[in-house]
Length: 557
Image 1 (cartoon, rainbow, N blue to C red):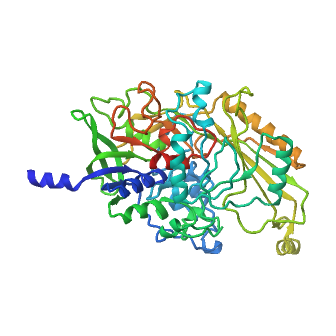
Image 2 (cartoon, rainbow, N blue to C red):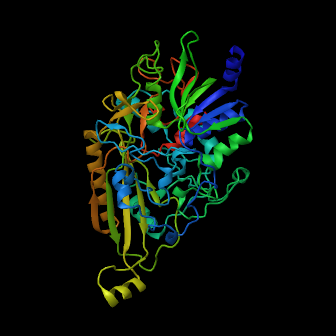
């Protein structure tokens, strides 16, 4: 029996374990396998194989039972995930349903999740911007959070590395606050987006409107062909999974690349309960897993562990990894684990119409989504009554529409003869929020899920800094729309809970000092040096940029 146990443990021993197969986990797996490490990738959800498991990717609208709408009953059963822009009949199978995986909202928080191989890399909005020193220096400059232990120069070669492999389309804009990258050709602005750019940059020299940068292959390079990926077809059906590999996902890119090495073992249906810690060795030795289907408890072992479960689940796993040495969670000597969680404020939009350039219209689709306005507030000095700033999206479109009022012949004529109206334009904010100790996640002491893991309590909210920033965005964007000659301007400041931005960050933050942070400058636990966290949980602050590209760079680094 002793020999059998030894053999069994040997069969479950690897050089490295990666927890999570999404954007950051895929990169961790790729880099470890390429360097010859026998690597186990654990995914709590089901297996999803590129192309084979995209059941709706080539369906026409009329082939969906409900024309891509979800039944009322489904929406009622899923009040949180139903708020997500991509939760429709064509992609609902890639989202976690509310009832199946409950959590506790001490304050309203919309936790959007994708439990399958590839995670939310199948569903993300694919916007990719680098951070700059402005972002990494933010906490040191204004005293909130702790100083980042790295600067842009530390991450630049890794941004280069992941951009070349993933395929990022964008323009060279020459903005120090938004560094240029290793870009494929960008997707051009349309005629009204260009008009808005000229209007704003002529009136406000410090403000820019650029083509949005996105993880789409606009012009395939040899490295993309080697991955079996090809040019984006501009379908903008990305949430279904792309059979062309036209946008970056773990399923189409990093996981198959890792598998080609022969060094990767991918184990789906593996709910990670906790990380095992050996007090004698002073190191983590493995991971306890609950099989999703059988509920069997299994332990896997490795010299190195990467935690890439997505920010909030990474916090949950580490908080649940308790021992005599770490009674409040693995590596939590600083007592900051689970705290200083932040997000992006997407809670304001501005819409309008433009009555000019009516000899043009839009046709086709732009996977980049249009324009991007980089942060321009508090860049070089504190100019507002709030800290940090916001970026914004901007888009314009004009297509033929039918009036759907009326009855009988009048309605038929309208439907059969769509008319071009004015251009419609819109913008949304993406504001940086300040990490605070009062924004936290914690384990419930009584309630557990179906796999015996404590339910997570989430207590995260907006603050007065967010409210001031939101008012400034609305006032400023309305002013810019007026300068551009737009009409029928409408401000939308409808409240939405944190979380719907799907940019949760922090809780396992990086820092110089083990007394005030969990990770060092290498994303490595101060107190447990063979455990690395390179997903959103590691973030010390949030900046205004979409964060996924930075997670990829951290993982590769």
